[in-house]
Every structure is written in C-alpha cells, then in structure tokens.
Length: 220
Image (tube, rainbow, N blue to C red):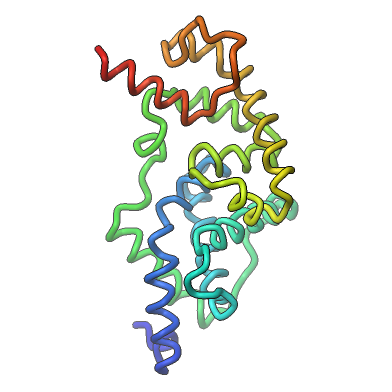
C-alpha cells in the first residue's frame, strides 16, 4: 500500500518520523482550517494540502524543533495563496499524492479528527456570531487571533508562523481583540458570557471569555 513511500530504509524512517512529529497536530490544524474556511470539505482539503506539502518538505524540517509552528506556517501560507489565486489547490506529483492522502485519511479516521470545531473549543460561545465576527476581520488579524486565542500560540510562535516581528504580532492581536470585543460584546452580555459590568473595561481574549463562562456555569 505504501510501497512508494517505504521502498527504502530512509523512506521508512521519513514516514515514521513524520507520523510521530507531524500527525499529532492534525486535530489543531483542522480546527484552525475550519475557522479560516467555513466549508468543512474545503477545510479538510486545506489540511490535506498542508500535510502533503509538509511531507514533501520533511527533509528540511529539523527534528526536535517546533513542528506545530512549522505546520501552521505551511497552512497559513497555503491559505493565503488560495485566497490570492482564487482557485483550487495546486497539483503535486501524481505518484506521491495517493499514498500521502491515504496516510492522512487513515490517521484522521482512526482519531476521529474531522468533527465540528464548536464541539471542541467554543463551549458557551454561539458559533454563528463568533464566526461572523471573525469573518469580518482582515486575514492578518483573523489569523493572529485564531493562533493566540484558539490555539494558544505564544507571540514568538505566531511571529514564526506569520513571518513577522513579535511587535507586529502584539499590535495585530491587540487590534483584532478590540475589533472582536466591539462586535461580540452586545451579544455576549445578552447570553451572560460577559457580565454587563464589564462594558468599557479591559479587552479580554476569547479564551478569557470562555473561562469566565465556565466559572459561572460551575458556580450554579
């Protein structure tokens, strides 16, 4: 089945290393893709394209470094390229694609990866309102917010993913949170996610809002 990928010891070692370091990040990558592209099939395609590119470039990855940030950078760049090109993903070598796709699909099926993101991270937030607010952000602002507040990336990791200075990340994140707060505050207060007394106070992250909601639910 994987004869073309496992025809030599080096190929088997490559696949084993890829499985060990890259595959465990599929769940997080799918959640990220689902917020970048609202269509589940397109999000799955983006995950597939990301892993295909990552496997082809695996010889350039340094084992033991930040694989998660490396994969997210590939996905982010792929998404931006798709947005610019406004067309389907580029083709890869025909002899490599079926094996890689099967490898990714089998891993996803075995782990139950492809399930709605709302079930994993959104908790008390209403997904339609959140997604609408996210969609209204520019790509750079949406990306930095997703990486920081839904994927728990550090400033340094986000800078690595987006290939920009840490200061730029901090500025974009602050502005993105400000925009999201303005768009979501009214709805959040109606739902009891953010107390009405919080109007006009410090900017909170989506993660902080979610934690506030959890604490209120636990105290009931």
